[in-house]
Length: 217
Image (cartoon, rainbow, N blue to C red; front, side, top):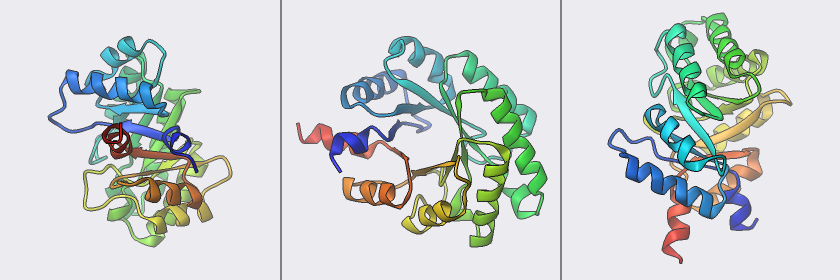
């Protein structure tokens, strides 16, 4: 697989707490230059980035990030605010505690309500695989499918681990045919990126692949 094809599947990401506008603007410039799928940035920069990019690149942002234990009302407010500010795609974190308590209907309802708010814009559901058992991951595949979300996503990159090949393969075996897969967290080489894609991922959350390209030019 050619590098430009891999880059076209990348959500070029900067979510560090210390990120400043100058860094976000550089991220946007690099995303356009290398033809990534989107930029994934903090909600506070969505309006500025959307205006700066002016349709040249999709803008993705995160909701309920990184812990997921916001109320559904708070997540809905964040989502609507982000969309009004120009976000094209939303990556939400599930209520992990609710899942572990067996409150699957609550988790499903929250995802469904955020998808309704998104309408035809993409909703990705971050399940934070490093904190879940295999059985919980499989349950989340079913929940995300039934809730009508567009993607299931492995990780925030802010917990104890990121994407693994095993988890992406597990997703591919258990999600419905209309649910796509995003691997995120710790993807540091084109070789790993290509393997994630071969296992079923159609999006990758990372900044390192663009950094590699910049060092080679």
